[in-house]
Image 1 (cartoon, rainbow, N blue to C red):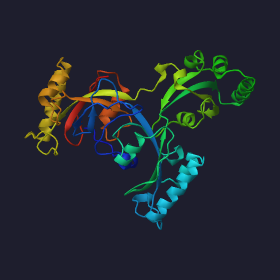
Image 2: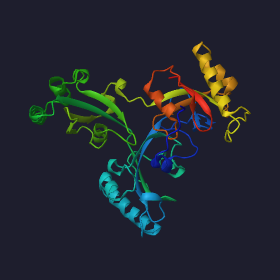
Image 3: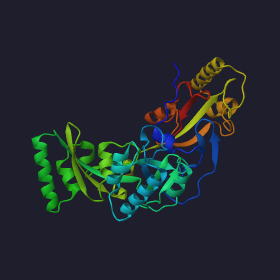
Image 4: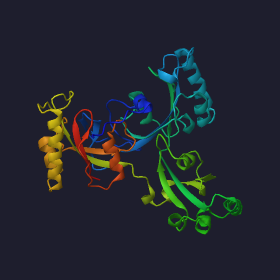
Length: 369
C-alpha cells in the first residue's frame, strides 16, 4: 500500500500561505528560493533560515465557516469586539484569558500559538506583521474572509530546568514543600536539582532539561514553561508516576545541545505520470510505470548509486533536476508535508523512504542532515 497525504488540519489551512519564504529571529536577507510543486518554496541556503512565533486571537462572525461561525455577529461587531480586546491587552490584560474567552481557534487555551515558523509560511497579512514586529507587539485588528484577528509576536524559545521527584505520592509532595522552603531561604534551583532530582541525566547538570521551541500543540510541561515568567518556578506537574518542579531560565544559561532540533535537510525524487497535475514535467508513463520505475531507482540506490545524480536525470518536479532533488531545509511545523517526509525527523541522516504516493506523483525522500 502506498502512503497518502494526511488531511491538513483546519488551522494549517487557515494560516498557511500558498507561496512565501522562510525567515525569522533576525533581519538578515533570506536566501533565494526555488519552488517545488509538492510543497511550494524551498530554502536552499547552507544553514536553516531564522524563525519567529505568532499567537492569534480569532474573532469569528456570521461569515465564518463551519463550527466557528457565530450567528448574529456581523463583521462590524466582530471588528468592534477585536478593538475592545486589543485595548484590554494594551492595558495589561492576560492574553491567555482573553484567548480562552473569545477566540475561535482550537488551541485557544494555549494562547492560539501558531508555532515557530520561517518567513512565508503564513498568510501575507500575518507574515508582514510577524516579521516586522518587535517581541511582544500586539497588532491592530486584521480582517480577512475568515473573520477578524489580533496578532502578537511571542518568544520562540524557552530554557527549562527541572527537578524530578519519583512517586507522585505523599512523600514526593512532602519533598516539594521541603524544596520550596529551601528556595525561600535563598538556595538556587540548580543546587536543589543536584540534591533532590531523581533524573540521572539532568540532576548532575543542575536540572538543565531542555531549550524548548514553541509549536502549535505543545506538551503540558512545555506549555507551562512558556506561560511562566523568566526565573519563576512552577509546578509540580504530575506525569502520573513522577512530579516535576520546573524553572524557566534564559536560553543562554543552558547547554546548547539541549535545544530542540526541528530542522532537517531533505532530498527527493518525484516521478510524474500521464495524469500528473500542472507543475510537473509531462510524462507519458502510466501511474503503474511510475511506481515500477521508482522501485528500480531505489534498487540502484541500494547498490550504491548517487541520489543527486538520479534526481538530475529522473526528477519530474519543476526545477528538480537543476537542484539535484535538493528540497533544502524543512521545519517540523511546516504545513502540507507528506507523511513520508514527516517520518524523516524520527530517523538518522542517510535514511531513504520507500516509494510513496504524494498525490501529484510517486516519489521517495532521503534525510540528508
